[in-house]
Length: 259
Image 1 (cartoon, rainbow, N blue to C red):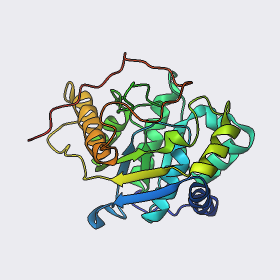
Image 2 (image 1 turned 180 degrees about the vertical axis):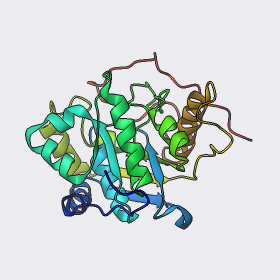
Image 3 (image 1 turned 180 degrees about the horizontal axis):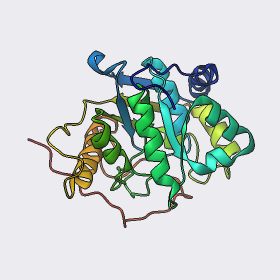
Image 4 (image 1 turned 60 degrees about the horizontal axis):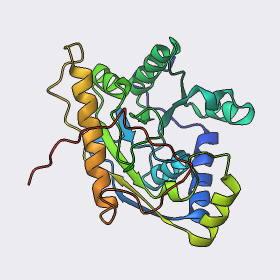
């Protein structure tokens, strides 16, 4: 286990992957990164919480993180770690395996807590899957990211992205080649914005309902960060993926914004 409070140094394989991600995104899309991580939060415990709209998201976020000079360890589905080549790369890069629906998910939170304590930034998708909201707004989140933040006292920075759904279809690898060809021709704009840290200091980790309240605040913050990235698409996206299912079971009721 990593020594507590020692700064995490991203492995060479992950630093190279971040560079490759920037090159790949540059070929397929026009990347626009705005916002930043506050200087006071750099070098300390940090959780980046992002929305999830496309299989292309991890590459986009890796490119955006490189632009902001941060190399987070990613909490990723166990399926990626079981893949022959990708799995080896994920492990060597220091990413954290999450086996959802099994007892291993608790081990993932323990591993993430140890990583945060060791000074590594962590990137999580609080929704726990590619969202299926018909308007492509963030869904009701899982509580893992909030429980991690409350347990570690780590600040949470919302990261919103928009446009990656125009590059790769939901059913990737089905339709992968067609999506790449269309992106090479059209080069859609992909936007990523690092928002303001989420206020969670008034919540106590062990208090009843605290994890759910913290989760809702995180999803609200991601939603508020996303809204300016899609001003002309307030209700439904212009680009509709016919292979993307719709599921209203986890719709998130967004809190009203001031004004």
